Length: 82
Image (cartoon, rainbow, N blue to C red):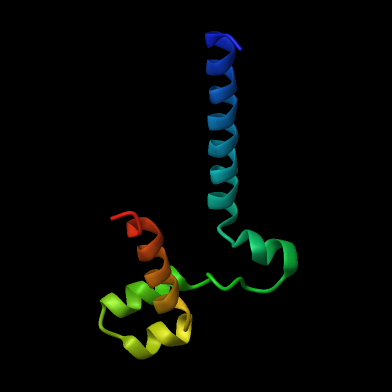
């Protein structure tokens, strides 16, 4: 593969990701929810963390009780090499 072919391929991938992100932002729904009609395990995690940072622990757990284990798992994946 030549250099120009690689650049074209990378550009196509970037454009595809930008279009996918734009569609998700316009719809603003969970793709899992759109496909299956039920909320995914991650739905509400951002709002739960926002509620936790505001000091409302009960609301955080009401929005998504899995926000704490999911956050710890995310932290572990990011830092496991250190």
